[in-house]
Length: 101
Length: 149
Image (cartoon, rainbow over all chains, first blue to last red; front, side):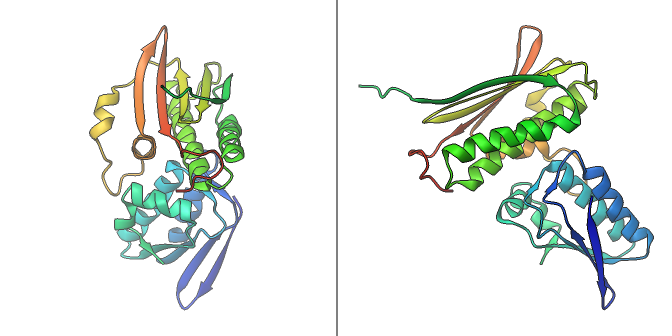
């Protein structure tokens, strides 16, 4: 999975460069988020502006990342949600636990 | 007089239950819907998402990632209803239990069926011969190519 990390003012912005996060690459997505916390990034923004399609395994990977960071008293936000991906957060009520910026 | 339904599409495919193939068939379904309703991207997205979830469930839970067990997928569309049927050869599961359950907020799993049940108008799971069938139905916009969510 292609991605880049932009750091500024203590925040790590993880920009996903794929158009799709699904069952085929969700494990890699999860590893990217796990590596973030391992490297000491506790203020993370996952930028999904390039992601046109995500399934429940992509959502699950994000929940994993949120849980990992919360354990370390950090914060994980999501940004750049497309209309479709945003609708999934509402349907699954994940908009209640994620900060969407 | 009762209006006669107009059939727009009928497909049936059988393929090995491999993770890497799921995207191909989900995208096929999305592309068909998008060709019929080019102004309704949300409908195409929902069809692709629900089919992805249904096929993933079969591969991971029904077939335990055994590619030797094939998956059969059928889709039929008339001008009122889109219907998708996903057949698996696994042991089946208690669908009624999942109809009322919502995962814990911080649980990674369990949102696939929740999405299907919220985005489709009718969802059923039953046995047919020696297979299980997940049948998903969606009511369609009244006029082909003009409906928008």
